[in-house]
Length: 316
Image (cartoon, rainbow, N blue to C red; front, side):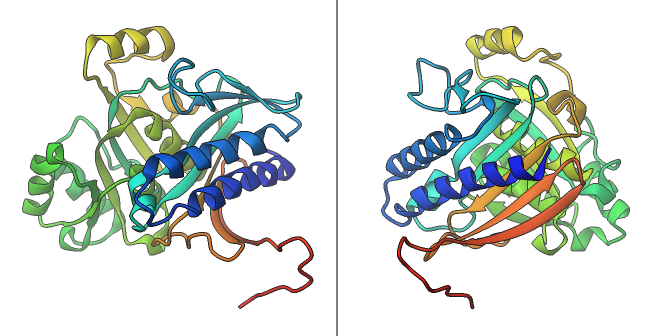
């Protein structure tokens, strides 16, 4: 993907983060999310491209903006877009770490249309990409990933979303001897953190949103990480919708090539609240990470915006 396009869409993520940042700690997650959605939609429409939402805020009758199938931009290059304008709405509302504005994009037709259901996910960084197997036991995955990373199981950290449905998973991981890092919202962070050495997270496992699975998978595909998923449907309606739209075996294992059918993809996250990977928005500053599939790189970017009429830069 051309650097100009990446920079244009980086600015979209930053705008969403700044908009959500106005609601940090105010206990109103819906208003924070709406602000991020509106800002993202507005900025997308300024770009000279033909963007199409494939992962968004819901179906057309469920969301006023950034709904699945919505067309964005001024016309031009055809791009498919997956968004979570505010990943971790509760984290933002209650000023907790790791709220993010996230965008993944790729050429038209390259990203899976994931239905609004659950997905069981397992993710690791590049060094352990061949060590995971979603059909194996949790213990086997823990042991195999530790071996691939060259560390004792006791030093392995597994990130898991803190939900009642994961109690058996948590118990088994701890019984295997590994450390458990619980997160309370926003599982895109947990998955992408496995590919960044200083994050302290080695392995991500658990069930979360399928749309968020596509976002995380895009990041992992960009840098050669490992990701597997399987839909975890809650009702017949979700199965019917997936059968019509997903275009994959809805009962099978979803590998990276099923979720992201190109190497020419990009994932961008901008921090809303401070976290382990990214600083939150503050005083005109935005801190972002870019996973670029073309260059196979991870770049951290800090952007400083000046107010109109302000002739000074504050860099410290």
